[in-house]
Figure 1 (tube, rainbow, N blue to C red):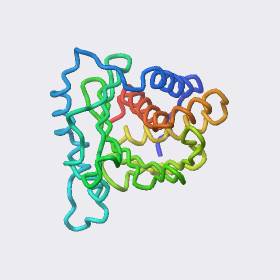
Figure 2 (cartoon, rainbow, N blue to C red):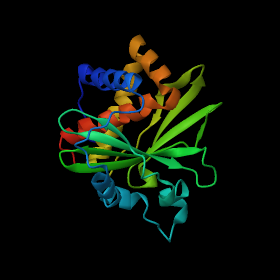
Figure 3 (cartoon, rainbow, N blue to C red):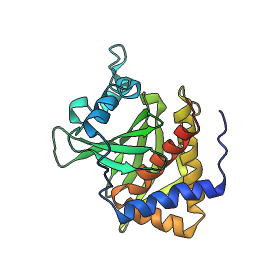
Length: 225
């Protein structure tokens, strides 16, 4: 596996900046200069998204379509979060078609340097009373990164030592992103302030999504293809 070198300053910067931004503005910021309709179409037509929803008729059990269906993505009400240097992320909720109150996961798109990267955040192995796993997928089911979490009073506790990232990824950006995330979460647990932020920001999963997104933006800026 190609090693991603991050200084501790970068790691803590990724975590604490995203936590403070989300805590201060949990509904996300918007910007009138962003053409949401145009970006949404770009996400839908991206190689990443097309790979996610491509059905393998020869092996349906290994398809991400076992986790969500394209018609369950809420394309009409995306949440936009601005990033530095012209980059930003867009989050589309994935709602259970059989139960409108159940959030199955989030489709997250990162837009940096006129390129879009898409991955899926799945809650299919998470119980909001007992804990479990939150999973992240890029293009294929085999690309999954599993993050073990437990439920604590007021939030979701991430176990930095209970993260399974893919040993290798066909896409260098995803390999960089998952390794960055793993390092960031382990580093966060050694810092009391960061660990506290992450636990209580995670009442709605903000720490996980924000940190993965920040790592994705960071790796996009490294021109990792």
